[in-house]
Length: 335
Image (cartoon, rainbow, N blue to C red):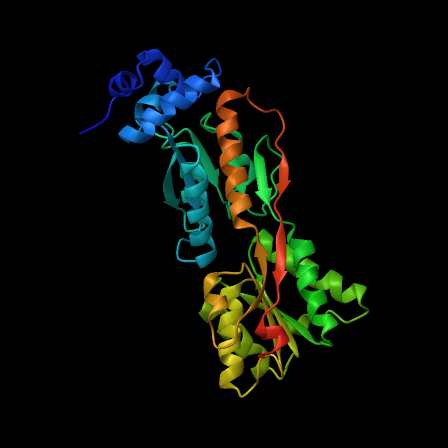
């Protein structure tokens, strides 16, 4: 049996309006009255009708999250964090998969769900600034590294600085021939930024950023990393360390190194990026750059919801989330 506001009011011996004020966290309620009503809420097991609450404000209680690759563990873990962050505000998340295709990203960004969502969190790969200039007036927050001079909040980590820290770690271990796996032939901004960080840190250390040790990939998966590592070795270029665009590429590379009789990290040290769960449970655990996914999710949800009450922004904010380098066996060894 569903408990109503009327039931709570009768149990607490107060008016329905007082219960409503407590449930909706209105300010003009004394601490003693709030405690009295909350006690009845807890004892009766009352749960507010969130749909009705949102509708009273002219909202749906839903935000959309559009991601390029749901099969990628990083995006799956990020989506879980966004769901948790939205739930803390009594919001539900509608998940869209764009496949990183411009047509799908355009469809999502132009507001084809604008009647059922209160805001959109979008991680674009192929969209251009012009694609975002004329769109439905639904609050928008961008994730990832593609830079847009537009009035939308943009949440990311500093990919160049993170890549430099990863390479610096390898250099500190005495590695000198450091490969980069995962350069992209297209417009993948994160790959370009991480490659730039690789170059800058090698230059700063007085080492050669050898383009023969840069392997491009068409995708972000295990097979792409394995193929890239195999191409380098087959061409006679054997690095003593690898910095990979992401963990999946790193794990694929480690598989090929093992097949070729090369030990990780004794012969080749490996660093990934994203710190996905899979990298923590392999035969050799993976050193990785770990973005603060919970912080990214929380800031994205808070940005979207704040726009519901604020005037339209004339200028977007570039917000950097934190990251850490998590050192594991792929660089430090076992034991």
